[in-house]
Length: 461
Ligand code: NAP
Image 1 (cartoon, helix red, strand yellow):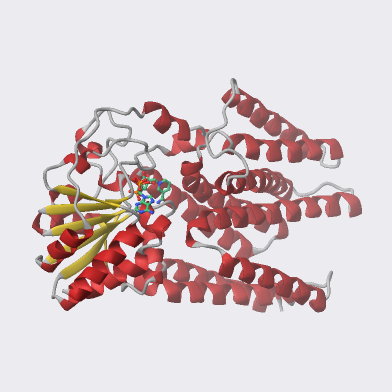
Image 2: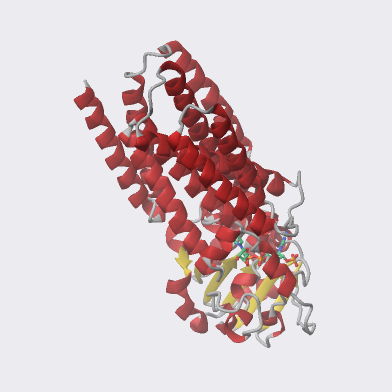
């Protein structure tokens, strides 16, 4: 029996790895998701047959209840609210590992007063620490994104030294727990410090920086699950936890690189403030405006178009009308593509998901490195609610907070039209010199409304 279970776990682990590999490409991502889900199904079945502490009826009741709640929220959530949902799910992942570690600890110390194996006690401590920190940190992230608590960085004097003291306190209590495993006071101290540290490390981070923190917390939830796998001696949990932990860290690093931040900066917290502090109003830029009729006429006369989507497209929910614009252009044999910046929007893959939701084929979405050389030969670039990801200051201005961030070379196209509501700044809070360039025209208004008008103009031409 145990050989069959280990074999099932091995198959599940292979399916997880294959599934993650397939998430690498948008074309195979759906299949990858299904393969990973199959792996999880096999892992759950293999685990269920071993359980004797609770009945199958109880397990099924929990599965049905959990699935119903998950299904309800997944259907209800708006795309712009996805980061909150991921935050709270990470938190529950951390809470699950934290609870399993504690119940295992109390079970062992209650039933069997002799000492716990060293590797198990260390795994319990690690799981309590990372799981507890992930739970409260994710709750704070959720509340910040939801607007229930201030989205701006909450800082106070001595914040980092306090965090350090708490961390050292945790380490000391951990050492004493290894020596005397049955002292309940020590485990209470460990629990309290982990929960408080989760709150203290996330509150100094600004609301708009939350996606990076969420990706990091996601990685933490994987590490906590991995530690719990060691406690339960469950190989598939160790593998799945490591995969989540490692992929979360890689994603965090990709996001930091694309935003020109260091991972250490993120780990220390408080990095949301630097951007806000360095911003200045700077010289105001004089811009040229364009209306919807002229824009429609411009579209009618070009042979190549690149659309650069950004956070404003998500706010306006303009993706469906952009697909209609694409159809109008393709009717006119215009070469039509999308340029995707890795941190456009507010979460990784934000633009890809929205455009896929509007049934825009994946092969139209071209990543930054591949499309950047095409801009100089492009007749028209339409920027829809993007700002920082096309700001040439990232290339030209060493004083700018976004200097060094790789950007889309939209400014190099023959004509650039920017669809946004006003001269409002983007997430980094800096002026965009592109708006004042001679080849740039501003199309003011909500992206969905203005592009809808352009499409109707084009339909009438
Ligand atoms: P952005 O720089 O935040 O700019 C978005 C622009 O959209 C704003 O300037 C705003 O201008 C416009 N906008 C808002 N609502 C609109 C509407 N209804 N219609 C038309 N325009 C609208 O966006 P981005 O270029 O996508 O850059 C993303 C930024 O977020 C980067 O700085 C990135 O580092 C950061 N970030 C990304 C992630 C991620 O994972 N993707 C995570 C964290 C942070 P108006 O107010 O004038 O309309």
